[in-house]
Image 1 (tube, rainbow, N blue to C red):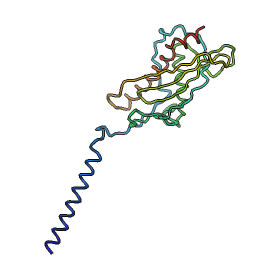
Image 2: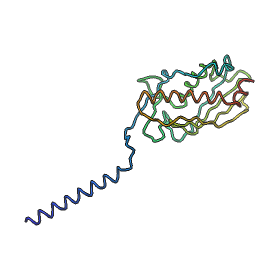
Image 3: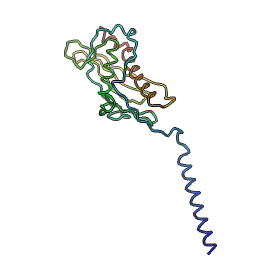
Image 4: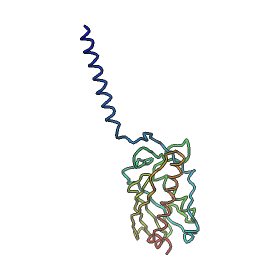
Length: 205
């Protein structure tokens, strides 16, 4: 009876050792930061901080921002992620409202940024010779946006260019800090568009 008890006890101890060993093997290669963040981005809280004086040549100009298309396979319909997939950015107009489609959110954000430098962006492409800008997202996370811009006039494609906007990796994760960083990326994106020499030729001539 005593031997039988010891035998059962030894089996239980052995099983526990195996279980603990398995747990250690499964978790040993995980990043120490195990948190998953959902970061809300609100259109009303995005205030462009682009230096308008740098782009004075665009003041008073008009552009038809006719289309933003999201072809980025690493996004969702209503947001995007960090490179390590542990941060999800959800897009909406303001707090406690329904989420917005990514292309709609960025259309209005870019419109605000263009207006900051005096460039009026709308969906009205009807006036003759109005520069028409198309933007296609090819890849998007919180460290990099790859996109293609196309400029048309009178429905004729005049210029195309692939652009990339990069941000340094996140050093410290907090909701306010991540929001600020995401809004800064919008500024960098619009600056990259306005800085492109080919686009400047199309918009200013």
